[in-house]
Image 1: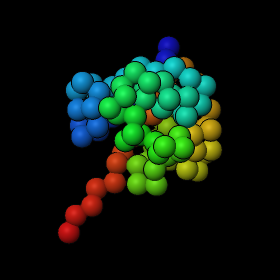
Image 2: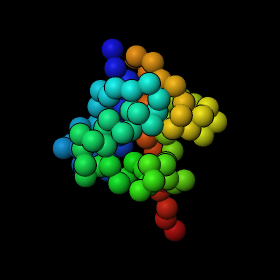
Image 3: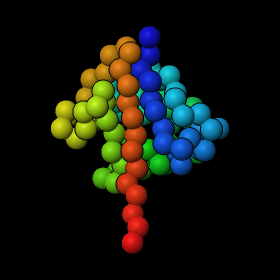
Image 4: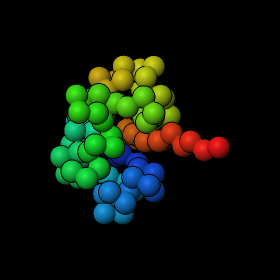
Length: 91
Protein backbone atom coordinates (compact mmCIF):
# COMPACT_ATOMS: atom_id res chain seq x y z
CA UNK A 1 0.00 0.00 0.00
CA UNK A 2 1.53 3.34 -1.01
CA UNK A 3 1.51 6.68 0.76
CA UNK A 4 -1.47 8.93 -0.01
CA UNK A 5 -0.72 12.56 -0.81
CA UNK A 6 -3.72 14.85 -0.37
CA UNK A 7 -3.79 18.15 -2.25
CA UNK A 8 -5.89 21.25 -1.59
CA UNK A 9 -8.25 22.24 -4.40
CA UNK A 10 -5.97 25.05 -5.57
CA UNK A 11 -3.11 22.59 -6.17
CA UNK A 12 -5.28 19.74 -7.42
CA UNK A 13 -5.96 21.80 -10.55
CA UNK A 14 -2.29 21.30 -11.44
CA UNK A 15 -2.69 17.53 -11.09
CA UNK A 16 -5.63 17.17 -13.46
CA UNK A 17 -8.15 17.78 -10.68
CA UNK A 18 -6.93 14.86 -8.58
CA UNK A 19 -7.01 15.58 -4.84
CA UNK A 20 -5.63 12.24 -3.60
CA UNK A 21 -2.55 10.72 -5.20
CA UNK A 22 -0.99 7.37 -4.36
CA UNK A 23 2.79 7.81 -4.25
CA UNK A 24 5.87 5.76 -3.48
CA UNK A 25 8.92 6.52 -1.38
CA UNK A 26 10.64 5.94 1.93
CA UNK A 27 10.73 9.61 2.98
CA UNK A 28 8.46 12.61 2.57
CA UNK A 29 10.97 14.00 0.08
CA UNK A 30 10.78 10.79 -1.97
CA UNK A 31 6.98 10.97 -2.03
CA UNK A 32 7.06 14.62 -3.12
CA UNK A 33 9.64 13.77 -5.82
CA UNK A 34 7.47 10.91 -7.09
CA UNK A 35 4.43 13.17 -7.39
CA UNK A 36 6.48 16.02 -8.89
CA UNK A 37 7.82 13.69 -11.58
CA UNK A 38 4.32 12.57 -12.56
CA UNK A 39 2.76 16.05 -12.41
CA UNK A 40 5.38 18.53 -13.70
CA UNK A 41 2.97 21.51 -13.46
CA UNK A 42 2.55 20.77 -9.76
CA UNK A 43 6.27 20.29 -9.05
CA UNK A 44 7.26 23.96 -8.57
CA UNK A 45 4.41 24.43 -6.08
CA UNK A 46 5.62 21.58 -3.85
CA UNK A 47 9.31 22.41 -3.48
CA UNK A 48 11.86 25.02 -4.45
CA UNK A 49 14.50 24.66 -7.17
CA UNK A 50 16.88 23.02 -4.66
CA UNK A 51 14.26 20.40 -3.79
CA UNK A 52 13.47 21.84 -0.34
CA UNK A 53 10.00 22.62 1.00
CA UNK A 54 8.80 26.19 0.84
CA UNK A 55 8.34 27.87 4.23
CA UNK A 56 4.78 28.88 3.28
CA UNK A 57 3.62 25.37 2.37
CA UNK A 58 2.98 23.06 5.31
CA UNK A 59 3.11 19.30 4.98
CA UNK A 60 1.40 17.09 7.57
CA UNK A 61 2.40 13.45 7.86
CA UNK A 62 -0.37 11.61 9.69
CA UNK A 63 -1.40 14.91 11.34
CA UNK A 64 2.17 15.82 12.37
CA UNK A 65 3.84 18.91 10.90
CA UNK A 66 6.89 17.54 9.08
CA UNK A 67 9.00 20.49 10.26
CA UNK A 68 9.01 18.84 13.69
CA UNK A 69 9.63 15.24 12.58
CA UNK A 70 12.49 15.52 10.09
CA UNK A 71 11.18 17.62 7.22
CA UNK A 72 11.54 16.04 3.80
CA UNK A 73 13.80 13.44 5.45
CA UNK A 74 10.95 12.13 7.64
CA UNK A 75 10.36 8.42 7.08
CA UNK A 76 7.06 7.26 5.61
CA UNK A 77 5.45 3.84 5.58
CA UNK A 78 2.77 2.17 3.50
CA UNK A 79 -0.62 3.58 4.37
CA UNK A 80 0.67 6.93 5.66
CA UNK A 81 -1.14 10.11 4.67
CA UNK A 82 0.65 13.28 3.65
CA UNK A 83 -1.51 16.41 3.49
CA UNK A 84 -0.39 19.69 1.93
CA UNK A 85 -1.72 22.97 3.30
CA UNK A 86 -0.62 26.13 1.48
CA UNK A 87 -0.54 29.41 3.35
CA UNK A 88 -3.37 31.77 2.58
CA UNK A 89 -2.82 35.49 2.87
CA UNK A 90 -5.39 38.18 2.86
CA UNK A 91 -6.22 41.45 4.29
